[in-house]
Structure formats: C-alpha cells, structure tokens
Length: 273
Image (spheres, helix red, strand yellow):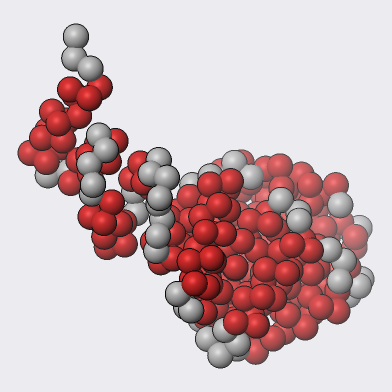
C-alpha cells in the first residue's frame, strides 16, 4: 500500500494543480520540507488558515517572529483554541522584547490579558493589560484595547473605582471601532449597576447595544458574544427594578445569542451573579 510519506508529494501536486497553494504548503510542511518562511509569508499576506498554523506548530523551532506568532495567536483565539493561543501570545511577548518592539510586545500582552480574563483570572489579566499600557501609552489603538480589557477585568474583580477610571480613560480617547465603544460602555454600565444607579446603567447599555450591533453588521463573531452580555445586563437592570416581564424577554434573547455563539454558559453565569 501507499504510505503517508509516499502520498505527500502526490497530494502536494494535486493541490498545486488545483490552485490551492495553502493546502499544498500544509502538506509540504507535514512532509518535513523547509518551507517555513514561505508558510509564514502566506500566513501574513493571505486569509489566515488554521490548519496551516497547526502544521507550523508541529515544528519545534517555530515561531521565530513576534509578528507571525501574534497573527497565529489571534487566529487560534478566534477559533477557540485558548491554550495554544496563550502559548503563542507568551512566545510573541518574549520575541518582541528581544527585538525591542514595544508595540508588538503590548499587542501580545493584551492578548494574554483577554485570555486570562476569559477564564476569570482577573488579577493576571489586570497585570497583563497594565503592562501593555506602560509600554505603549502614546499608541491610542492599543491603549483603547488595553483600557477596555483593564476596565472589564477590574469590574469583574470588584474594583469599581479602577473599572470606572479605565473605562472613562478609554472612552476619552474617542475610539472609532464600534466593538471597542460597546465594550467600554458596557463595562461602565456595569459599574453603575453595581452601585445601584439603574437609570445611568440603562442609558449606557442602550448606547452599548447600538454600538455592538454596528460591529455585528461587519460579521464579527466576538460582537455577537458581547451583545449577549449587554442584553443580559439589560435584563439584570429590569429585574432589579421589578419589571420581571422585561427581564425575562432580555434573558431569553441573551440565551438565544449565547447559544448561537456556543457561549450560553457565560450568560448563565452572569444570571447567577
């Protein structure tokens, strides 16, 4: 019979003949060919390919570039491969520090912070976000992302004052990305909700919902998860006001959004809090 090694060059030829160079590259990597540089170039210039990243991860010396590591880590995070993404964000941070690239190091730290916050390790998330802010205080796009992450981790760890400062600082920078706007407004609304300032929270949540729906229009999967969180918070506000009918509608909508992104557990956790 034909062995895997025998089949590799045949598959490469087929994919190249069918004008599928990315799949051909994956099989060349699997076969042990020295095409890492070519694969990295493809990863940075083409639509990111998850299987190409996994083929590269099988190489013990990979990655050697912070930028490539970040591209791969972002893709893995979006795909739900949190453990692999975390390892690459950590690797990217080291590579960026060695090459004295503060912007890439900050990007890597923000990625680490997101993943730490996703598993409720808020002190570690805050540490990562604040380290990123210390590195790049003058780069507004990174600062806004770090402030949004810092604010969310702070409010969920119970530090309302720090959360308020971070959210207000992020909003003061005038973010243009509607998803960042939504994240900052939502976190600021949570601060008001915890303080019992329900009218203020409700107004901010309405603004956050409008922003996140604008982001969803671009096809953002993350925006749909954020919308579920915002609608859940609207339900919590209605519940505290005693409007159980409105709260039930919001909770139902939040569960529907959560199920669509396989994130219903987060909605249920929010309801239990």
